[in-house]
Amino acid sequence: MPEPKASSSIPVPKMKRGIGPFFKDVQREAKHISWPTRQESLRLTNTVLGVSLLIVFILFGLSWFIEVIFKMLKVL
Image (cartoon, rainbow, N blue to C red):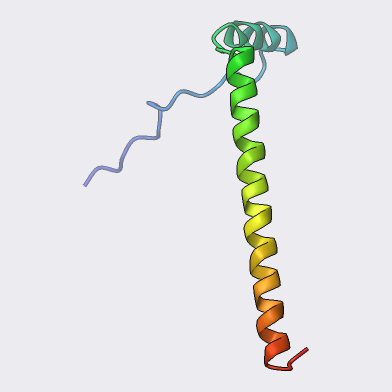
């Protein structure tokens, strides 16, 4: 049974191209980025802040509830 060929079908990056072509590639790829609008950024920021505050209140409530339960059981 013949052995499989070396993975010659997988492209290997050219590591010796230098730093100049690297930055040209970065610049070319940066042109493909689609940045969010200011309105979308503000909406998403407000969503993150709102969810964070909701989690803070839920955790605070759970902590208070557990503390009350422990005090009723005279554990604390």
